[in-house]
Image 1 (cartoon, rainbow, N blue to C red):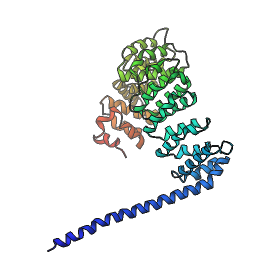
Image 2 (cartoon, one colour):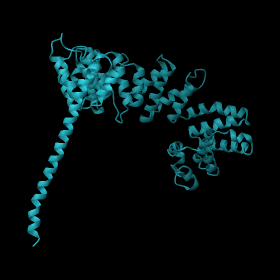
Image 3 (cartoon, one colour):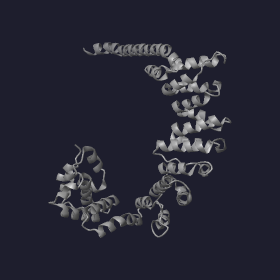
Image 4 (cartoon, rainbow, N blue to C red):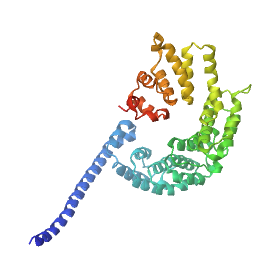
Amino acid sequence: MEWPLAIESAPAQESAEPHGLHRVQKALSRDTAARRAAAEDAWAQHFPAFQSGDRAKAMQSLLVAAPEIQLPALRWIRKQLAAAPTEASPIRPALLLLEKTLGPASADDLFSLLSRFREEDRPLALRICIERGTVFLHARAAQWLTSADTTLARVSLEAFAEFAEPTALQGFLAATPLSSVSRATTDIALNNMAARAFPERILLPESWLAQDVCSPISLARFWTVYPDERTEDLLLDWFLNFVTTPANRLDFLQAIERGAASFRWRSISRKLTPLLRGKDIDPQAYELAWALHQMGEKNGDKFLLQDPKDRVKANPEDWRSRVALMRLEVDLGVFKDAYKNAVRVYGKLEGTRDLKRLTTQDWFYAARSSAGAHKTRHLERWLQNARLSAEQIREARKLPEFQRYLDKGAIGALLAIR
């Protein structure tokens, strides 16, 4: 007897849902209308001040009405573009506002107006379109890479390097006629791409590898972020022969180190090792030795350890020299030797005032040597003396020498995140 009632009630339940949806739509419409009205008020009240030069305060007031403020801004730009040149106001202030507020759909609208902009305003408008636009707008904007207007070609390349998706970037780079842009522009493009550090690897077109197209320094910095298997001989030649400052020379070394790690370059380490010995020792041999260490070249370790070992040998009772050697051995991963030195220092200083002179970092390095050498006799005590902060514990937990102890007893408790 209950079934007819259930069936009769079903249509009423279904009709209630559209009614509720209608209420939501009406509420959204009212909210949108209120925000647009507020944007119109903000535009009328604050944009004149923004035009006249009081931009910092006026910009903040206009941004409160974002993103709806872009609508009166675009409408005002269209009005100025349609006005006679003698009656039109400068458009740049509105563009500066759109640079911070323009949405993807409105970027399409702005892009459609580019041909009507005055020459001095078009580069900024183009950059804003690329910055705020979608991949579909980027595909349309690629035409400016081949523009006869070298300013627009420059702006588009720099903007694509800063804002385009990595999957599209290589196509934009290949489409760029390098004769129309300066080396300063290609350097900016390289720096923009390097600063973004995509997980994807970006390979430069062959045409970009010429020294008259990009500066070697910018290329090296780019290849430090995006290693390129083709560059081994080129980077080695630049490191050995390119005349530049010591700091810039290290850019070549960093790119070599990154490439060697990515592509297992072995011949390059053999060619660099002779620079660590003899009368032709490289002026940046210390940095070179660290790079060789990162490449797995033992001669780099040998060079780095030579002077600290000589100091300890000359004065075996100088505990400070032995601590310095121990810390370097830990950094190099020579844990067994580091642990022997740590035990010797600890045994010499225990019960003396000098024990208090050991820093918390000294104790932490001693603990690392103990963990890396798989010697746990002193590990708990040394870790306690290191007095690690919560942030230091988080970093310590990432070190490979501590991995086996993270869940083990008292040592694991000292390394637990608090």
